[in-house]
Image (cartoon, rainbow, N blue to C red):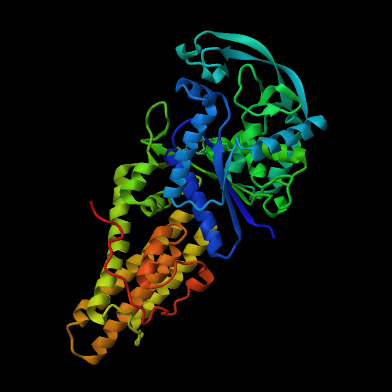
Length: 507
Ligand code: MSP
């Protein structure tokens, strides 16, 4: 049986994880958790991109072996995944044998088929930076100081025949309008393909770059960047092994906008085509997190440490914030004020207070047990209608990757539960001796508990921790299947509820 196979970009092992890396993992995790709740069998891959010049130089600068440094960075990324409750099924590191073997197998196949050839490469080289430069590296028409002396050199390298597939790719993209999502990103690719594309240089001489996978047909070279990194998606799926077909083709590659054109939209489809492998079903391209309108970057020191936020506010608050604030595909600006305001208003007031109120009232008025709902008047039917609207709407929006709007709908419902509580005011009903007021009191508590259970079930892909915690307090297991769990049926009647709990503490 083919599984739903989702991948993220593999992060460069040349620095600590930042908000952008964390976001991509959360977005991917929300998608796969959503699928699992729909009953889909999922395989979720993420990993680390360990080879290359910067990693080699970074290790040297710190007096370490590249592998040693990669191991330390891998640990940091893995801690982040755990803290964010990312439910990946696999973690691929490009230094693993299972990956190196597949890269070499595919290179050899392409070489044997004449898809790879050797030629001279001519370019500007900075020996201080140990890299080839491009015209765009110039500032005001000159090479910046940091590059030291820049000389024109000619170097022999291996090239992959990309150019011959250009027409095929244009046709493919034109016929498959949901291959790249959101759709406007596809136009950027088609725009790029209006100019002729060059063949792709896939090697570096080993004397200049040691930290890479040696080419199988010429061990004096290593594979350069994309031919190594992109292959992770098939090597992790077990290319060449039985079971490969149960994963490949991938259903979604989740990536940031900077690596769509040309790597994922041009190199990767062409590499697969040349290898005779099916193409992934889709590429989901997200935007960037910015700080005051600029991209986070190590060099300017403008960066947000996701671990700090998670330690301060918890994984679910972080997950909620990034999913609520970003429209998938667009950029978003990060500010601490915005984070705090979402934390206090949506999570603390709307959701957290609702939970503590209902636990409190049930303990006071009903011995801590969920009462029966015995009446159904307008406030009850209004709340049920609001639920219908919220959950149908939110599910549709989640299907379309419009998580921010889906979350908004869920919070409209949560605020509706709070309004219902105000309207029924169980604390006032509790003061009355009348039998019908007792029925209203019990009904209102039953309705609030049921609505809260459903809201939390709907939030499960985004806030798995809150889902666990609240369900435990309600005396049931975590949400596993929406088809069963999103039914309004007052299943909690008679359940003993847990003690008063603060979900999102104030400072
Ligand atoms: N190693 C390559 C990807 C190879 S995939 C076969 C790479 N690594 S990266 O560490 O630079 O970026 C990893 C992912 O994080 C990319 O999808 C990138 O777009 C994303 N982000 C990096 N900075 C980002 C933001 N500021 N905001 C959101 N995501 C961004 O590229």
